[in-house]
Amino acid sequence: MRFETPSAFLLLLLLPAWWFILKRAVPLPALRFSSATLVEGVGRSLRQRFLWIPSFLRFCSLVLLISALARPQQGVEQVREVSEGVAIMMVVDRSGSMGAEMNFDGRRMTRLDVVKKVFVEFVRGNQKDLPGRPNDLIGMVSFARYADTICPLTLAHGALDQFIKSVQLVTQKDEDGTAIGDGVALAAARLKTAEETVLKQTGGDAQGFRIKSKIIILLTDGQNNIGSRTPAQAAALAKEWGIKIYAVGVGGEEGLLRRTGILGTFLVPMGEGVDKKTLKMLADETGGMFFMAEDEQGLRAVYKEIDALEKSRVESLRYLDYRELFVPFALSAMVLLMIEILLKATIFRRAP
Image 1 (cartoon, helix red, strand yellow):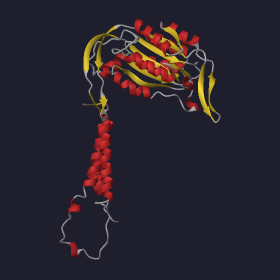
Image 2 (tube, helix red, strand yellow):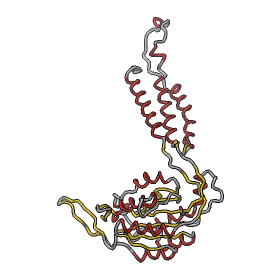
Image 3 (spheres, rainbow, N blue to C red):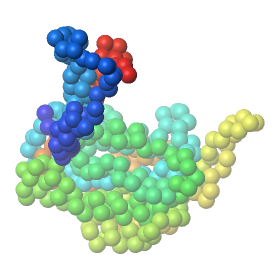
Image 4 (cartoon, rainbow, N blue to C red):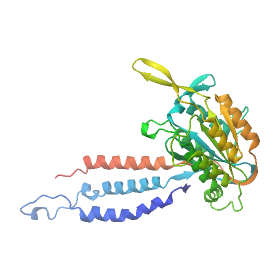
């Protein structure tokens, strides 16, 4: 077992102070009597002897909660191997226009959902035309009005599923927009420090590790209309840092967005569609390629071509999947708190 954020254990230093304040600074409730001589010889009852139990339960629950914050993990194992691989950052548009529908295996789904599903196939393989990328460093950035790192570069692909689920269409109007330049620039910055990221993840065991190829796969259906960086500025950064951009226009020229109102459900045309000129510029400036994908087959074809183009021999430390163990700690803390509350409300209830 290991702890992902051991610094959380520093909170344990506050517990002795809390215990002292609880025992010394807070006076116990009392009743006034004219004389206590009649009860001087009376010993402590069994209930009085165990009055410390609720406070002890609270103390234990806090220790367990702090342990949960430290994120205990189990199952991580390092295997040194020589393999074919690259560092890949996915840059995914999650603006409102990505809610337009497209085909996926005969079903109508939002563009964003199709992009996420085919991305999983690209990473894990689909036993057909996509072999998977088990030896690659994979990360993800999403963007609408703002760009966010969803998943840092990692070899532990088992963790990707939970990160991908968190990528959803924007729901607030003030968060909508298409900041292509910011998304690409953030992904490029992540790739620039990819070697340092690997050394940090492996505890320095990968000395001499060198990534021979770094790429960005950009998936968007719109045009840059907001952000602090323009696509041209982002392309210049990627070119300076030796990063190629594979720009993919999703959904064709114009899409249809499903809207539900008081009169029922209807389809609404979506804007001007993909800005091919800008996407082609991003690809050409960095030595990448520009693609259009109108459905899942088009996306699979794009990934298949990238599979053929982007292979380089690297030495890596490959992480096996791991699982988080904070849930049992958190649940145990909750149970202890519930027991404490129950005891204070019944057996150890005080008056006044």
